[in-house]
Length: 384
Image (cartoon, rainbow, N blue to C red):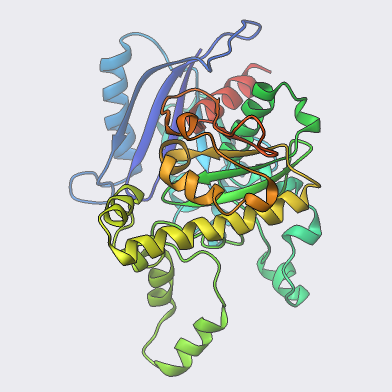
């Protein structure tokens, strides 16, 4: 079964074709990647819209797949609101629902809907599946997702904690439990998904119990260009002091000009680490701020789940930066957590333990694969 995995942005389409086993066939590797690529510059004179981008994608797939036919398409959709807690087969009503959620993810959901409609127009008989970033976090209890704001803000505008990166958090939770030989239903852990966007999730009995991102992906950890947590009164103070300050300017400042970029001058963790190693004070401060913020969340979530069995690092920084992992764990002495320097320095694509044998909290590096997770969910749903 050939699954096309699609991640539609406002100006790009990232795609992957994965060959998945037929129903009933055993497979532990998530299928085989047949081809993958990126189509950029959508909305320009080069590529006018997503429909034209899909024409380009179809031409590429015809060249790369020959006479083989795509069986289904699985889409990453950032925001599923309170409605979607599982992947769903797509019809017109589902696309309209994705569009109605656009106010909660204005940079993402409109593009996802355009991609869904473009594939529907290009290949009307192809089954499509939406896999939602927020779905995994629908298991959070109300005391974790509710904000202490007037009730009408929740009822009228949906203001609450939603959480993101759920597909990744879900995927690595399953792999970690399997690696440790623990039944997922009994597995308590803390998962740190660390990329340019970063979030940490408390896993209780195999489910999301709390997570650092909130109403939007801005909250929580120090990220590449995002602030993470900060006092919201800063916003009202700035609006009072500068009458020319606009919502768009503030949004740009918080999402694109903050985080590591604001403190170190670089949004890429590799550049920040290189600068810190060369003695740059701003880069050193940025690393310490990011590590300290994450360590605080780990400690809090360890308590929240009643004692975590494992700390899991994943995504680009989490999988590849032994330096940052060590900085974080340096703050976790009170939890009895220690790293094995040799194991921590290893870099590969395998699930691996990097803590010492006597570490109270087992520390794992678990490579994520959101495309695989989307392909598996799509294959399962269209086969039922």
